[in-house]
Length: 127
Image (tube, rainbow, N blue to C red; front, side, top):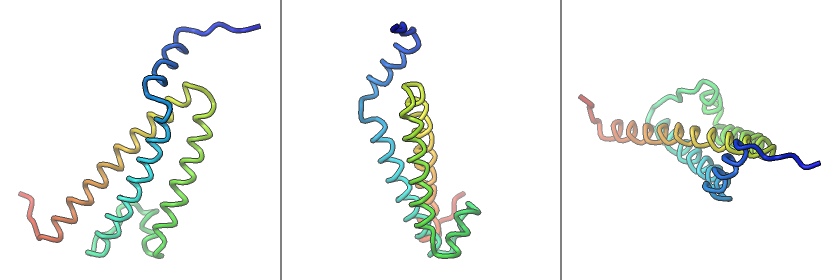
């Protein structure tokens, strides 16, 4: 016997429809791009004497394996989130929110790394 769709489900379907069918792909791609930028800017700063602030990532930096940490870490997170997103529309929207927040955080990290690079390279003093 078919079940009726509640108002909440209709609103959620409309939100997903408004976001577009490729929203998850776009935020996954952005996550990968931002992690590459984070990796490149982190390695650039380390070459200028900076220290990785994340203790787990710092372990991999010390063993010259940060790229493995990034590839495996991002890959596992994406696989898990894809699995969660396939459950239902509510889960898909939750995954999109998590990815957008994560992308925002990585954007701030990348911008911060770039600012620190220019401050170190040009001996700028922020007053």
